[in-house]
Length: 214
Image (cartoon, rainbow, N blue to C red; front, top):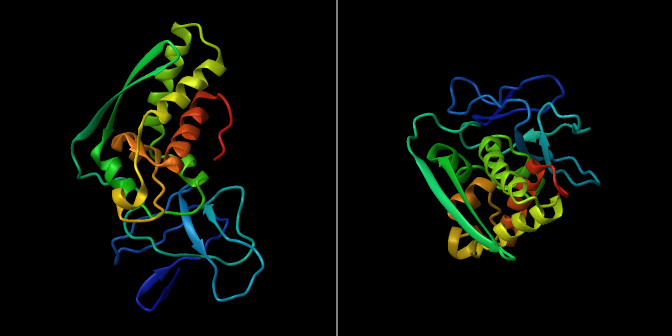
């Protein structure tokens, strides 16, 4: 770990868990699988550097440093309460009614996360797995109860995200480009096209139906 100008910068390596901030700061450990935004040092290269996951199979081949960590890497434990949402949508002649409860701590955590350009990082984030999986399971139960094909279930998932309220980034967030994590879109019950695409991929990934890339 290198301390530069009073701030902490940590070099990514391929060895286990990395502590990105010490006891003298308010940053916590960065666990394996957590996505971070990486930037290049002042060394010219001819490639793009995006989002990497510490400990993943794909590792940077040149020295990279973490930049812009602004808090803990896990949802806060001191935030109480939950957001309860109900979603009703009709596809064809069939109506689905889904419900989901998301801890306020998780929603607040995602609101504070740095935004990156790699939309796959939003889909693969694991902190909301439990809640996206619960929603996916409701779709699978609906499929089995109504004897639907996987294709028909995908149509219902697509209809679900399409019937969420469309909101533009700037009026809603104050930013021109502000991709949301799936949990944010679910709690807000809306977003723009990139947000609903991220949510759609996240749900389909957990139903094992259709493509999972965005």
